[in-house]
Length: 311
Image 1 (cartoon, one colour):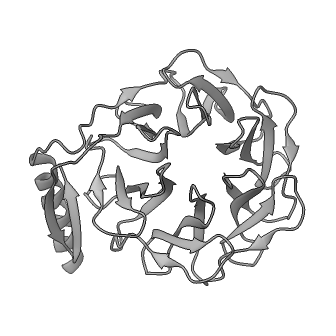
Image 2 (cartoon, one colour):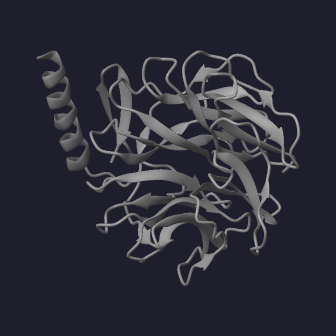
């Protein structure tokens, strides 16, 4: 009965959030891809001119594709029949790291940004996925089960010895570096729900950023270029949408409000746009939404002890 009441309350809050307009974030998202196959997991090129993503448009197989950020024809970068996933553009624009099952195991690989022959970065015989480049391009963070638990690790971009960053017995995943390279944001179940946390890039004590209560979950954090905010996807409003929160914690701000699923935000290098994938067209496609500039007027709701800022 308590669970039923919880979900009823969640639905009421979601309706309230959608019903209270404010000029904070206009959900003016623009669709970038239009293929009948699913497109997802976007990331920007360092100059903002292109977006790399995963697509099933090659006979249903997950491959890495690149498209102009304004839309247009996509270019396929990987062709292996094994699934590829989670592409991430290197800071100098020359390489794209991605996860692949082509070795018979999920490992980290990379391919030239202009296309070419992929090379393997990790070779441990366990699941390793979700690569993220350090700002100087020298290291790649990823999540791995090589400790017997899903934790955050870092490895030189050229391969070599990996270093474990998180050691909590809860699952940690989806790392992303702060723009100054001093911290790594990631998602963890250590609070009893999957929420966003931040840890020094060298390891140490992690700090909780979002406090979304179970059974709702957060995922795929992405730092703003100035390091002041983190975009993430969350179910806190009763639907899977894109949200933004100060990187030191605080009140989350709802970004997308469409009733369809929105997921995996990626902040543009210039800080003025966020790419994500959405099912609002009836299919998973890549979309881009504008980031408002200047002061914003927001309504505040307190729910479950969380202050939520919404439109």
